[in-house]
Length: 324
Image 1 (cartoon, helix red, strand yellow):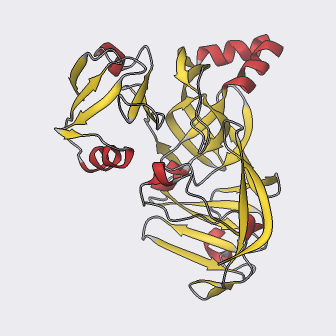
Image 2 (cartoon, rainbow, N blue to C red):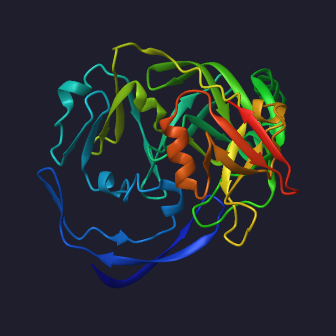
């Protein structure tokens, strides 16, 4: 790769900016599709978080240029094509969402929540994520419409201000933000009804994450500008039940922090808070393994499904041993 001489300024979810050089790369081959002159941005900003699980990512600009993708999560297969109508037979009579492009290459779709119909970002890169809403937008709506505020309050099951705002890739939060959790009996998206859905607002971007791909394959039709969902079991009603009862987030400590590498942010009403864990505590070990970096922690909690023995330490040095 060689430098193109151009650069671009990127912003993370904390609105922190970073200038990145655009590289020239040889042609890329994906199956039988060859992509030439694709601008590549090289950055190590994600390395602390992805732990070699992801080497890179292609943007939706490939779809803007007319490519279509099928993500077959049932058979672990991806199909890429530049042919119009290639997926027409599969798409027929399946749940479909037309999307709109925002900021040139960000597809937004309509999602019907119990209190409002909202256009939000479809972000397949939000690994494991479900439906997220923005607290600032929710508050603006609530202040302008008393009836809507009442509907939102009817579905609000938790409120808190102790949760840090969303972690950015090169900027991390230093303050707290208003936060709430909605419990929605039903959420409708493109003909699919998701039941028992818990939706949080501790994110500065409203989006639909990749968790819908657990039970649905997806066709991203770049020619017709639409998303087509292919339910694995053929059913249009799908149970989610994604309540988070632990109520704890992990954040990387500053590199200059000598007390530990991983800190937690705890919600007041969650299981972690009830067990005595507090925001600012450090993760010392999990199942007897000392946590020396985020990837060690991630690998342990991903591999072990049984109850985990965890040791935390407060900034003052108090050790706290818990199990969950």
